[in-house]
Figure 1 (spheres, rainbow, N blue to C red):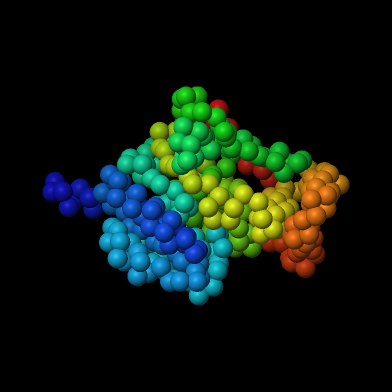
Figure 2 (figure 1 turned 90 degrees about the vertical axis):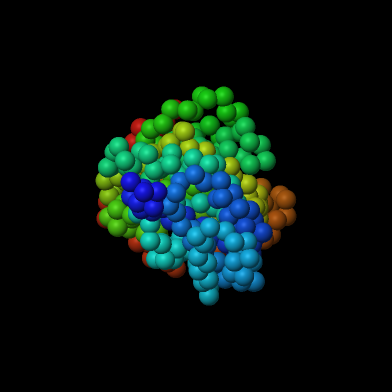
Length: 317
């Protein structure tokens, strides 16, 4: 078989990333894709209405197989990725933050589980921090606590000594790097764009699992993440979307007594504590963000998924 025929026989992977006023950071990601060994991929860069169109800068970089899609408005993380999918030709979509850098066999490793188990809809790599390359950010997710709305990444903050090198099903995908089959998107649907920023990958993980697919942590795949370049550690925008979307996520995915308990807990403890701390620090903008996040729920109708039961998964340990 000729080399061209071998390349054509492997699945096409569409890498989708979003740029928003960070052309230099995005180009660092694109530069890192030169390391990829996988023979057949395209790259879709969605620009979310940046102040400066990055198309020419990216073109001058002469990066392989890149298409820039410029949106006239900021669609957020979910909307931007949905737009990217509309332009993607791949059998698999690999969503990755623009503040990440890839490793050579990343695509090969993420693709492998799909070839052996048709119930897998999303695969995620191990994620380490770029500035602290031995420290883990993600090695799977623990299941959601339906009463507090809390979950957290397995291995977060730990030095990687191989303790999370066992691959397997996990509760949620990580939005910084997740490969999704086209079939899972066709049957599970696109991301819900009402989230805009934060919690959208958790909600989408639930949605994909309801369609009958698994989320899979692939320990042999590795990516590095330059955490918090996009929005920053703490600011009013982050407070607003974290507050609004945590409640939105729970309203969409949990029902009955667990949802009632969560609302009592959230309003009587979590929000009250946050408001008290912001008041003491005289962070008026944070208090306003908190208030607006709550008021949003009184003026917006929530779209509920067809099924509101929590999918059963086995967390990776």
